[in-house]
Image (cartoon, rainbow, N blue to C red; front, top):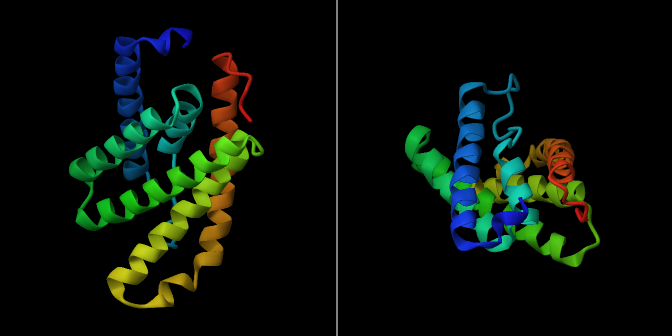
Length: 170
């Protein structure tokens, strides 16, 4: 991955990483979790976004994240799923990028914050669309699930970064 400093190599890497993130989104679409609480997902595509954040930087990771969300909404989503995914994706990405910049948090910590902020942003959009704050009643469950999935995604991203020789993952 050291050769990703040139323009054509980065463009190719972004294409491959976007496709991989889209594949992970499709897998989650095909195999839903057997949990009756709406909004709980593994967030497999976030592995790609997180690895890209550490390998290629914020600009490329943000591009991959937004492109994946738009393509997933077009291919197997709806307008509402696009709104929820975009809100969650942008807010969680902003939180992850800010925490990464501090240098205080590990990849797992950054990922966990991303999971929590993703759920918070989606609940906020839901509250706005249905015009009630009752959607926040089960936010504690979503908070715990966001933390758990964020840690899992962070562990996987850390392992990937280590295998690629990226030892500076904090």
